[in-house]
Image 1: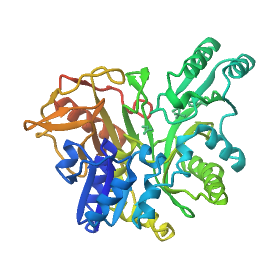
Image 2: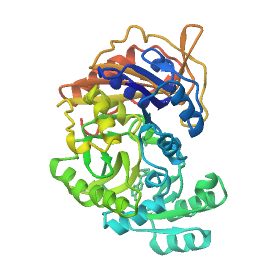
Image 3: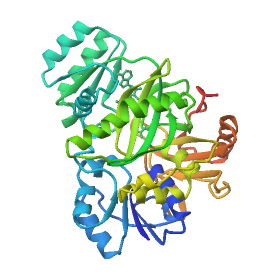
Image 4: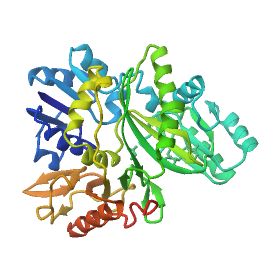
Length: 420
Ligand code: AMP
Ligand code: GLY
């Protein structure tokens, strides 16, 4: 089978790494890829937001299966364009990708599906939004409606902070995404991410994880795309997991089906758990990054069979057998991230890292220049290890991170603290 993965992050490196282990995988191409991916797959310089260009490339290269990594091409309708060209594609339609691309769409679906989530109101007018905030008081959560690369959410602890967020969003500082806002009840509890595959009918859980969104130790500093993760998430007990499936995910998938826009792909459910009861924080329509790196280490090569069965509507035939152990990922980011960061710094010490099914340094923003791996992105490496328990995975991953010689980057020293 010839496989094309779209994306260039640590998530796509880990997908490529796991898929490559499946004997069904013949040719593996990743577009655009990165330095780490280029060591295990062909990299193709493609504009992955251009569905027509991707379809032409796939036809010219006899691609049998396309896996879409990030949300942007999904929200742009690339999966639809590829399917209409007759290609087998893993990833939702543009309409189903609204579950991530529009917060107000998701809130309306939750209403229809009676899925537990924060109470909310939706505004296109700044004065009405301000009046609502004054009436509700703080803490309160202000969200830009559209995709904002994880930066469109302000958890305001004071009324003034919430009002300032409204000023910002209607001032255009969030671009198009800020023209509409959702204002939500603040939910207290512990967050976890739950990943399920869905082929439009069958729902198949593929793992749980917890992320670290803040840049610095002790969950301080600005929000980022994620500075580390571990899997499984202890807060996702069997009972809480079943509640999330029965009360949130299954009714959502049913509602999507009823509307004639069934969801096919991976649904990433961001949950807030209090007293064992999960409530939905948000959906994403793709694997999390860096959560995916943990999941792929625990799932290995079977992921190709699962993703293919999902795309072919055969999930009811499948089981996911993940390793009964723990994985932990430490993200190494360029100094300055998530603000303006340095580019082009050289990373040494990667050659001496163990790389096997228990240890992997997944690459995100890297490129090869004059024979050296150099940093080109904000999040640059995702150092991942597995262990019999979380403490062991933690110890192994930190030993690897310490051995990487990179002056241009930093990482948190407390990934997994909550569960440890
Ligand atoms: P989102 O992009 O919707 O996931 O929001 C980003 C982060 O903001 C979440 O991971 C939560 O930590 C936080 N957050 C979002 N909505 C709420 C809420 N209603 N109550 C408390 N925290 C929230
Ligand atoms: N790590 C969070 C995300 O991928 O959205």
